[in-house]
Image 1 (cartoon, rainbow, N blue to C red):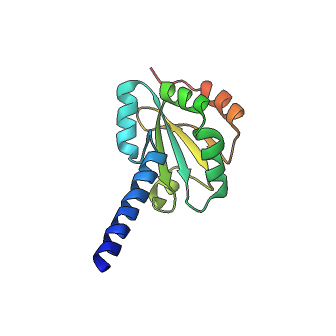
Image 2: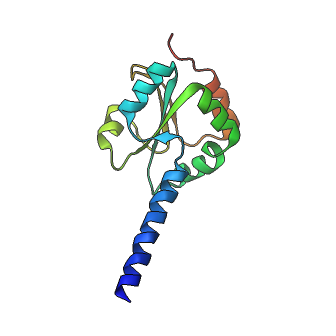
Image 3: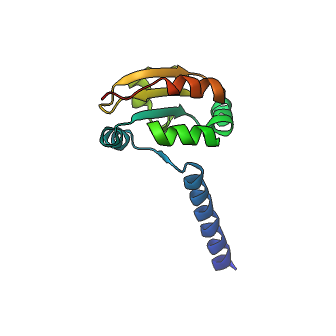
Length: 136
């Protein structure tokens, strides 16, 4: 009986991990790798500073990041990175993040070119992001 419970527990944990990875499909969690990739692909880096307890972050994911319109623009112009602000206080401090969600846009050298603080609905966010161009 204990062996069966252990197997069930292990499978449940594996399912949670796989589900979390799937939920973040297309998003990296390594800022340095993202900057390097952006430089190679001549794109910008969109860094989403978030926290697990942040209700507005969850709303932004559901209302914006999960939408096809955002995914299309992001695939064209950005390398996407998600940073857990509670786990990466060094990056929160480095980019002057005051609250969540905060989007920081970087060029291919890792320099900040734009910042969006707080929740922003899909259409206004897309309009703002479309104006940004990577350095040539």
